[in-house]
Length: 137
Image 1 (cartoon, rainbow, N blue to C red):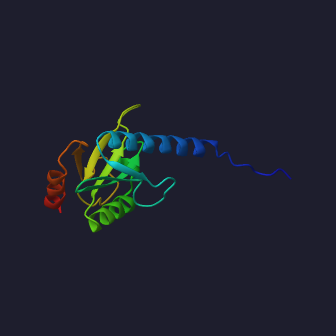
Image 2: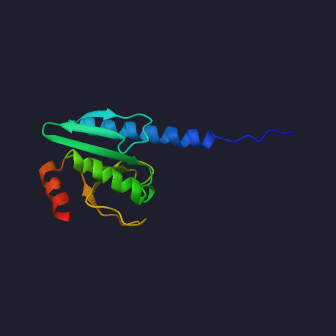
Image 3: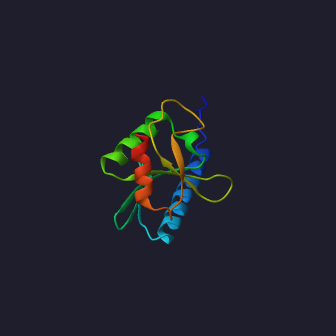
């Protein structure tokens, strides 16, 4: 009897690409003055925690944008960030290169390409971003 084999090489490749993207986001935030802690291999709510004086970001990294983040994952991420007064930031790769950021501003009701989020930059004043989250709530 032939044993059925499962090809996991694609999975490892996706994981490796995801890990590389997380490291890229961490480097970019560190260059902007954040102290960044990466939860390597995490299946939890946040991939990175980035801290500056008086500023805490929870960062979820997605290779393909908010569409890759389902409502349950999105809402849990938002809930945990709000619980500790961190800004919920979704980092994604807008094309083949680069990093773009969205500030999560509210819960996601259903899968959608236009999530409750607004464009955010690491240089943005965090207090203004926090006000935007509170105004959307």
